[in-house]
Amino acid sequence: MAKAVRNSKLSLTAEAIIADYRLAYSSRRASVIGRAEVLRGNATFGIFGDGKEIANIAMAKAFRPGDWRAGYYRDQTFMWATRMSNVREFFSQLYGNANVEAEPASGGRQMGNHFATRLLDDAGAFLRSVDTPNSSADVSNVAGWMPRLVGLAYASKLYRENPQLKDVRDGFSVDGNEVAFGTIGDAATSEGLFWEAINAAGVLQIPMVMSVWDDGYGISVPIAQETTKASISDVLRGFMPDDRPGIDMYVTRGWDYAALLETYSTAVDKARREHKPALIHVTEMTQPQGHSTSGSHERYKSKERLRFESEFDCVARMRDWIIEFGVASESQLEGWEAADKEAVEATRRTR
Ligand SMILES: Cc1ncc(C[n+]2csc(CCOP(=O)(O)OP(=O)(O)O)c2C)c(N)n1
Ligand SMILES: [Mg+2]
Image (cartoon, rainbow, N blue to C red; front, side, top):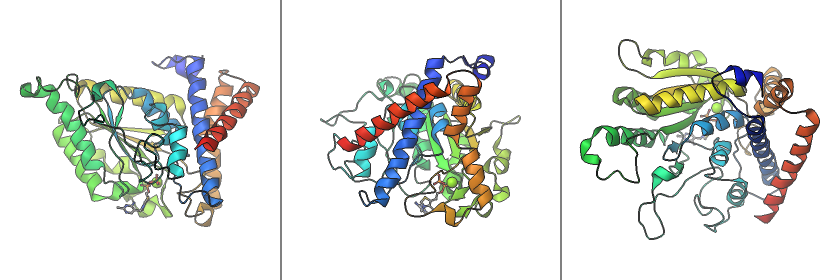
């Protein structure tokens, strides 16, 4: 087992670490193939989860049945890790497959990597959301999901604290233990809805865990032109608790698997137990293929930035870490990668 993981309060088997790596690798392959498919003219548009894979996996490890997500198109790997989506649905959505069995999030109506799970069964009755992972339906206007995220977290607080809800909460809540997970990009934190939601979470003291995926850009706009001090966690410091309740703040890097696991475990446990909101600012993320298929980031990022992005690619960093800590060998990794590459491509061909 890897040293860094054994030394922390988390303990993970080599098998679990390898499963995480293979998921990250498969998700990356899907992103690479997805972009190629659009550029070949086989799909109209693509926006992918590349560069966010490892943090997505760490977030998924802290996600429990009954929990909710409200987030955006960079959560591909999280959705696969929690089994709310998968590589088949990824390609169905890319190709605009209108069959709701093939593309249950929206039956081909939404943009790629816009997710949703069902709250109702076919007869229109509520499903038991306490038994399943859950995602509200993504919206394309950035930060548009923030008020809903507050509502989902506030529901847990009401279910825990309001005695009149005890009789009606079966299937929806177990004592308000459900955490609402939000994700947002660094640039979208400039939207008014983000600030309103953060303030509401601090006032209401609700179990909301907000992740900011900070890749330093909003399409071609660098963070220094979006965010004061170019750091959302720096400027949010006034929200941190002192002798008054506030919002717990964590900063962790998007390529550091062990640190990400520890941060998510700590932050989410506390939010769930104590109903305290938290913000996790995940820095040093990258966009290996740029923002979306509608552009080339080589046209606006400096050579230094592009070099940084390839050096700090989270999947490559996790691979190095696996070898360094003796979790698996280079040749074992190559074997799994070859198999996973083929499996992703084979799945694509069925869509
Ligand atoms: C309200 C709104 N304005 C503009 C857009 C167009 N748009 C789509 S993604 C994006 C940039 C988002 O950047 P960021 O929040 O950093 O997320 P990233 O894609 O970098 O992960 C913009 C401006 C939009 N979808 N919604
Ligand atoms: Mg960004």
